[in-house]
Length: 458
Image 1: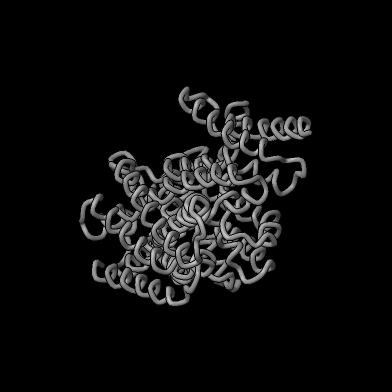
Image 2: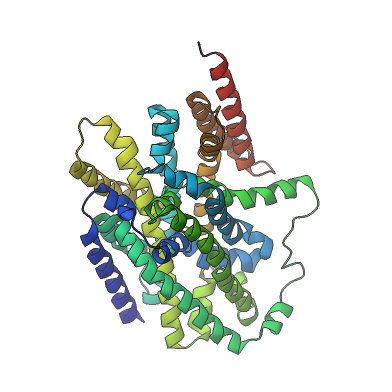
């Protein structure tokens, strides 16, 4: 098993480095030269989030809390991709932007670009940290190394090929990893359900385990809505999705890739949930005695499948983690280089901008590694990441695209108000999810700030 892991990681690194040969300028590095065909664009959109959050985090949440516990992911995540394809991919693609920060500059001005750039970076740091933690968990399970050593190894591997090859390396490795993800999960599912039947697994589920709707009261209803929109709306204003939309070969490819990826995401994500449900039958005491419920899938595969299936499943798991980590790492690095550092320099050449983008990968990676070593819950880290985008970036994006009266004053008020109210609400641990307060404040500030600034304009 260890030999396979080493070979697989070596192949991934080699493919990423070979793909780097197609990088000749900043557009190649950040957007793969806007030349991705449908199959690669779909694969890289699917792989954007299908990582540790889905296979480890969501599976453990499902095993403990049932179907309603995983509304945020995979259901909210699939909703996000579908909404991007239906409403956002087309107008954004037509703007021919390099980063998402460019949208805020073009629509609202330089100061808004800076504020949005900071928020975009904050959105991804926790996400990258979650993937590093997941890599450490899998490495510890397979090889016996410590969690810290596994986290550092994952950080070094992803940083290396992302640093060199940018979006081309990310896209090509995502396509390769998609094949492993789907094949590995299918093979693992077939063997597990040859041991235990679907009927037995579903019969052993606790009462109410498959309830998908909240209790009929206001608080539970609002929190249920918050679970849908945390990733479902919050990640629409994400640099990682934006990069894949803009890297597509055409507007039509961007739209179709988003819709296909959303459908695939929801379909394939059911397999880890079914495996977690099977684990409740095959390992009934695991959740009571385990130090970390996120290990439920690795424990199931290690204990009940053949070595061949273990190779496939752990290969799929590593693929999912690496593809998500590389996607998340490149996104804030692009914004840091293009929207925060470059505007504060004079006469920057394309070669210099490419160097800045690569150095930004190292900076973001170092910060995320620090966060990963301090926090260990994958599901919480990803939830925190998506919340920042929802309360700060989503409203200015929607207003900028679909409301002609939106102004830079309204956008800045929306970003600041959403973040401040969300953070203050989080301090008091209210019964209702704090992101709802932040989102409401962001929307009110956008409307009020835009209307007042237009009214007072000479």
